[in-house]
Amino acid sequence: MKNRNISIAIALLLLIIIVTGCVTKPGGGGNNIVPIVVTFDAQGGTVDPETKEVTVGSTYGPLPTPTSTNADFTFTGWYTEPTLGTKITEDSIVSNTNNHTLYARWEIPLTTKKVTVTFDAQGGTVDPETKEVTVGSTYGQLPTPTKILSTFTGWFTEKTDGDKVTSSTKVTNNKDHILYARWKIWKLETVKGRSFDIF
Image (tube, rainbow, N blue to C red; front, side, top):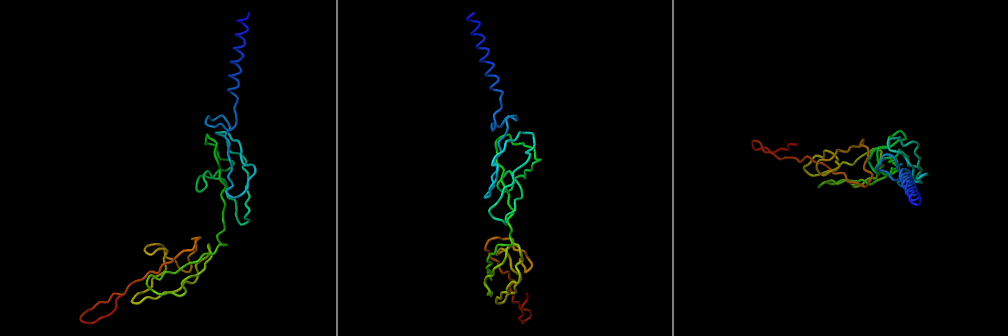
């Protein structure tokens, strides 16, 4: 009788262990069954709730909308990386089998920021030497530099190569930057004893 009771106790203990082991706990991940915990990083904003449980193979479902203390910022969606990454919507399928973070992406208006452009005449002279421009707008009127025995061919974003910038070019560099003058140098040639300039 005693041995029978011991056997029953052992059987019950094994049953408890088996049942307990089958109960899913949130946040484990890695087995396609246990719910995954997604953390929402508002990247400078605020969000409620800050976490959510999702299931691998199912959709993310409703996602929270964060808010920013800067009224000029517009929320454009949740992404898998702080920059770049894949956009995640409520219809996206959960494929990451581990706990992971989604990052808020904000559209920052460029038209409110002004930067200073410095004009490098590269051996010539220019007036004015700087100009304040608005990011997102065009450069507007640009000065024309002068240089002895040279013809000015335009302003560029680099000393060599780079992109040509004109009055109608939009300002996309949101930091103070330099534009470089590009020149075509005159060549002095002599033909049959006569000197003249060739451009």
